[in-house]
Amino acid sequence: MTHISDTTNGSITVRPMAEADIDAVAKIYAANARDALSPDERAKQGFVQGRMSPERLRSFTTGGSGFVATDGEEVFAATVIHAPDAFTGKPSAQRPGESPAARTVELAQAARLDSPVLYGPSVVAEGYRGRGVLRQLVEAVADEAQTKGYSHLLAFMEDENAPSFAAHERLGFLPLGGFRVEDRDYQAVMLPLA
Image: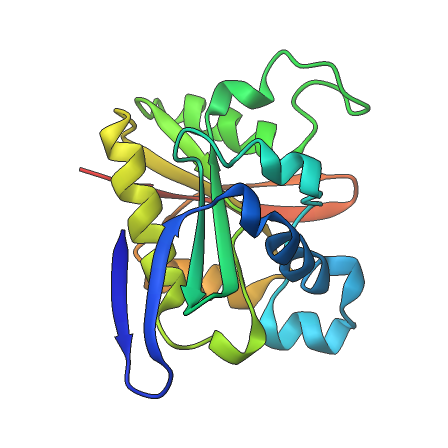
């Protein structure tokens, strides 16, 4: 468990996601989804890729694959990690290799990254942005990923999501490559863990 001090609002804790967190986390993801925000809001604050339903979030409450940040009892941020094989060989509405996650994994394979793990989406509620919370979430994910033997964190974001790209760049993520899926341009990034 990671604790960071916040002189304004007490102590912020980053911990594994629990079943009791699911409704709060689902609401935060939904409020920050691409389609829930205006173009101006997306340009200013960034946005979450994809959908994170309560059912999907439930799968991240075991095995240290979901994390939340709390201020007392309030859950205000979350992220998840996925093994790259979760995006290969699974039937879906999209052709294999046509999801942003699958394309990111393909770029990692082409770069010959040994044992990468896909992380995200991450979300931080509006009142907590700019206070180092994403850094704490990424540190928790990186620690868990290293414990499981992974060598790199992978993430992807739409080119339109400049705030997210800039935040990840500040955290040390490096460009992995760009790609296009369903008329949207994306960038994949990686963070070496060793």
